[in-house]
Length: 414
Image (tube, rainbow, N blue to C red):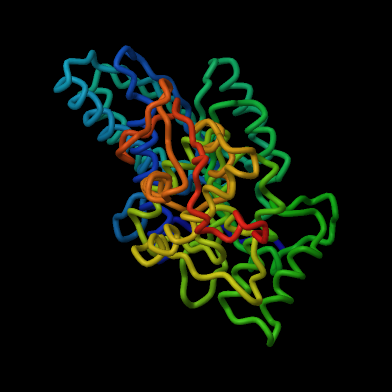
């Protein structure tokens, strides 16, 4: 049975899509701001690939992902250069290649109509914001080699993929791995529905799901859901652990958080990146949009190192979650350092922890200085006094005179 794709003639925007779009819009803005911070920078080139673009507008008038990318690009471009001018910096030119694909020809034609006025306005009023748009009409895995060849020929190093698929078999897991092997500065959003996998799972073992060719993993996840011994939250934790184990090898950092839906977590929106900085920014955006996504597990480091049937908690990226994260981080940070000896460069710490924490960067920095047994040293060996001054060039160290306030110092830690 084929998956029925969205009919964009009169399409409605549902609640989980609203959450996705808000995160996408705010993260893309932060991405552009972060990538254009260098005072000496005068140009930034990027490519955005929307693999399942849709028609661009919903019946309510809300923008779909293609227009969200273009609107955010325009607004961020103005914001970035206004800020740079106020700080005596040269403006930045931005060159962006946009690749939009949808498997339904009428949908791509509708997108061309909906996006044309916005592109025309940008080209008329922003001479240093250069946009080159391309439209494709094919299944994503079939068109991906052509898009890859186009980006490679154009020598685009910074690439963002939005893979908001209809089920979970429209994106091959090997394609995601290839993206992150091809581009060091790649990022990707992958949305998929476990329910759609079970409804439309092919018996052809060569038809690859984003999770696995073998349906046993998906059957196991749903068997867990139906178990009388597990509550809804515990099922979420088990599913999250299994999904993370399947997808973590696709990129250096992956966020296995589902879209928050109290009536049942059936959609996952995964953010992939090779840079710990990208994951750091993504976590912070989620905290600014509490309740948009959800995690069940530990609140500190090693977020999935737990037994969902007996422990773990619902993490909604809200104030309560941040308090819980601080409590865990207080012990987790020195424990991690002691596993390495007594010191760890901040950059190495970031690379280690951002693949497995939902915590906000401010909370991590605060707990580095709050714990009396920890200190952060500048490159010259001086202790940091303020969390907001911590630099990637600093070093974390466990003090030689410890308070013995943590169980692991006594030799019975975990």
